[in-house]
Image (cartoon, rainbow, N blue to C red; front, side, top):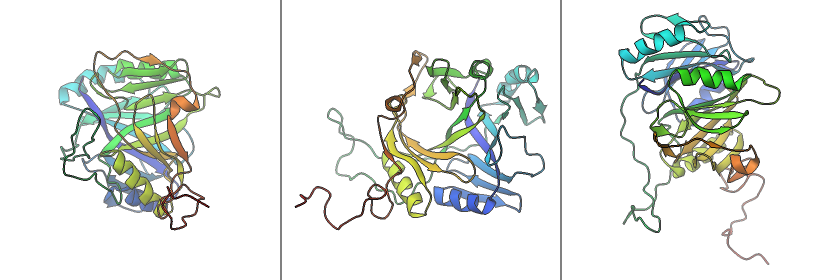
Length: 318
């Protein structure tokens, strides 16, 4: 089946004004707003909806607001919806309005599918010069003053029953990329694609909830530029910049008033049908090869809590 990725997400929020400021600072475009709903778009038209918790028609949450209430996945064609329909019809909360079908996954999250409305967009990342490949010649690497995310790249949830939730998504065509056996599953929505579109985590307490939503940006330089900008805007970094060993992606995590964390990321692994899932034991060095705790201040460009003194960082101190 031709599942293409995330088309839309909807948060249930408690402070729409703060969410409005956050997602504008984050780099999204405000497409529509009312007293109960904000609608933002990324560069390729992927939508981020932020609804007041009591807004009509909002699916129930898997935890108290603010949190993510719904994920809409895009498919390539009507035939893909037709193929998914019998698989979803047996799940709790099945809905079908002709243009969009869905149900609740085993964790209780509202999952929907529609023919994708995202648009093709021409974006180009900074080319890298490695020892064996010189791809950037007579051109400096780009410096970003802020980020403008291309799309919502993946979502991560805490689940009460990892095996059941992984099996549900596998029945819809999702493919396992890597696993923490009994603890977590990285899944991509197509055999050929980025390392993961969905990550499911089961804690010993088996709590349900949102861990984070990740936004794809062009390159590592935009990860830095975006993180520094939101820091200057006053939003709190949880962790980053850093690099994930499992997906190879660079990241920056920020606390999000719409729920949990938002992540900028770039340069994840690209996988094919030949990829064999690996098993990992959870641990700090598996999560991050390196990372800056609390982030870098957007004004001093130094780690939080360290003052800039006007010297170059490599000057000798006497």
